[in-house]
Structure formats: structure tokens, C-alpha cells
Image (cartoon, rainbow, N blue to C red; front, side, top):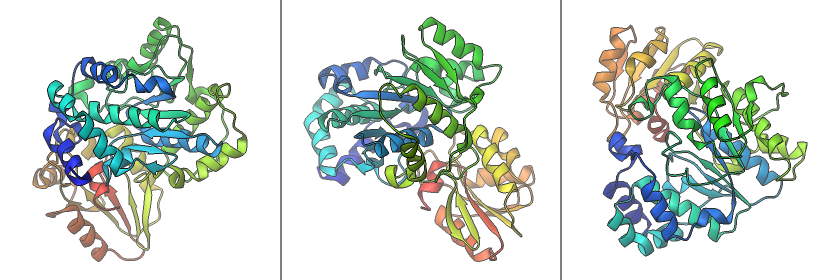
Length: 404
């Protein structure tokens, strides 16, 4: 198989949460342990930092990677989902894994994958760990795919565990309360490994404290730390908390890695160039101002929509699409009624039909029209806008992926 055929096989033959949702979620780690044993435990050949949380995982992981790259380290970065190309998930110093490596890995191990019916995430985690070991990275930043306790990445014993925050998302897998979700994400806390928690509340803090105590892990809460603001290429208001989390994490890693304040500052400023991170309050056009953002749950959307309120504009246009596992009752009321909406569906099987989205939106006063694709919706928004208007594109990672 060539690269295109290989990725099509990965996407279509086996469960993949990105496209299929619930059917891709597994409730134990037996398969990833099997695969890890088969590959001869590649993750034991390099240092790791493990990052979980409802929102901000990608930004936090990328900022950590960028700073360590600036300090001269060879840094692996595993994130999900991808926006355009599968290889975005696996990078070293910002460079994508090669197509040949992906093809050869699948070809060499395909019979094993099929025999044990490995999931998309299990295969991809195996590939990432194998690649990072082969390329002899100094450290790899490993972002959790979903949850934490039962995620395929949770076979590592990292130098540091990081949990960004807890919000209500993926409740069909992780639980319907913040306490339950905190327990699942807190499952990455390991024996005698320190943990940084970015944000907490009265519901989640007791869960983290208990897990840290059980694992004899020192716990640090970044929101309680007095850390000075550092300029950053990531412009979203929600990055304030992510940056504090990263700075707190770096302090705890100072015995493992040699870095200076200049490395931190340049890492923050060069994070997009160094890691390829996209879709976080990303400005696509100046006049009219167009911003896209991958926020897709109430926890993340509240911050983004509040940031829009701070913008100066004449008219607000919102290109909106979501996937079918979102609880519309928790997110649609967050959106402003004084905007013109362009309802659409991203081109994935998990997409919510745009007519359902529009129907539910209209019920609460979100007025707009239906469009057959994200690109049509965006084009119409551009054509309808004047120079002093503001266009926001979001609701789903997959909506953003079709625009950038």
C-alpha cells in the first residue's frame, strides 16, 4: 500500500473515535499492553511528559515541546486529532513523521493488528512510540486521546503528569459529573510521579488530592501560583491558564532539563512555527476579521465567545457546525443572538445534520441559513460581510479543518 491507501485503511478498517465516536472507545488497556510487548516496549527508551484534560491539551503540549526544542532538545510530540494530515499527530521538533515510516510500520505489523483487532488509537500510539524510540528523541510530550485512565497512551511512566482542566465533554464515556470526569483524567497520575493541575474547582480538587495521595505524588495547582505573564503566539484568552500550567510544569522539570528564561520566552513566541499548532484563535483574515477556533464544548466555548465580545465590529457572522455527540442544550445557549448564523456540517460521519443544528438554534433565537458544506457557509459569510464585520468559524475541530 502507498501512504494514501495506508491511511485509508487505518481510518476505515478499524474503530476510530474521530470518525465513529462511541464504537471506538475501549474499556481496558489489554490490547495496548499486547502491542507494547510485541513492539518490545519502545516507550521505555525515552523520557515522557503526559498531558490530559478537557481543553487545552494540544496548546499545553505544544508549548512544552516548543520550549524544550528552543533549549536544544530533540522533542517528540504526540497529539490528536489531526486537522489535515494524519502525520500531524506524530512530530519530532515540529517535523511530521515521514509517509514511508507510516507505510512501513503498518505493512510490517498489519497481520498483528488484524489478529488482535487493534483500534485506530492503539495502532497510532504504537506507531508514535516506535518512531520516537527509533529516532532517539530526548523526550516526548504525549497528549491523551480521550479521558486518561483507559487511554492507549496510559502505559507510560512519565517524568511529570499534567492535567489542564476539567469540563463536561465525552460524558457518554467519562461520566456525567465533573467529579467522575476528574477521576478518569486523573487516571494518568502515577506512583511517585509529580502532577500539575492547571485549573480546578470545588468538585474536582478533592478527586485530584485523593488520587495524588494514593499514588504518593506531589501535586501542584497552577492556578494558585503567582506566575508572570509571558508574550505568546497563541492569542486565545484561554491560553492564559495554559501558559501558567506550562510554566509551573517547567519549574518542576528544571532538574531534568537545562533551559533559560530566553528559551521559555522564545518557545512561547515560536510555538506555532516550532510545532505546527493550528486552529487556536487563529486569525485567517484582517478585514473583515476572520477567526477560527477548535473549541467544541461548553467549557472551551464560554471563553472563546467571551473573547468575541471584546472585539470591535459592526456585525457578527458565525459559521457553525458540530458533531452528533454534542449536547446542544449545553452549548447553543452560549452563542449570541445578535449574530447571523451559517449552519453547516463538517464532512465526517460523526457530523450532526446541519438541519437539526439550525432547528435547535432557531428555537432559542439563533437566526441564520442552512448550507450544504463548511466551505459554502464560509464563502457566504465572506460575501455577506463588510470590512468592519467579524466572522467566527467553529463548533468543531472538523469545521476548522475544512477552512485552514
